[in-house]
Length: 240
Image (cartoon, rainbow, N blue to C red):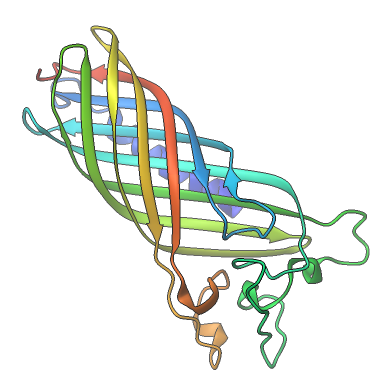
């Protein structure tokens, strides 16, 4: 699947960065773990994506600054299809296009209208993968290392209803912060919280083919909260 290929490429790029020689990674680290994402836009009957992961790598520039890269994926399957449209709150009206194209602007139809009569059970499967990078500022406080960052990149989302798949890739901003709690000289436990905004364009009803098929009604941005837990592994001689 194209989505699996995308995730694989993003992870390969991150692993390539993390696998540089220790001498070049002075102050660097990698982290991996579980990630939870709130999301009320990709499916009408789901408010969160509880199955997720993150992979993070950073290169320390000086005592207070690192350059970080974060790849994260969140998934949910088997969501009951709703009779409301798939792009926002249940009280938002459905605004069908004149040509009624099933593959254009997925918010224009209720979710259950994408279901084929031959399906015994109609379900919605959703996933979103993000790749962001940017500066991370940190301090050392005994056995803890609190930090905050401003990360910028892209988010690719998929909504699949029955036989129909709607995908899109858009710019994303992910400010947040966390703390690394030392476990051994080279490992730590990480707790991180982020606020992620995915920017959607205003849909052009007059020319639907010019836009991605997965958009939100009236171009409303996605605003989600991400919570992550995982383990950090130091690479090279990190500055304290």
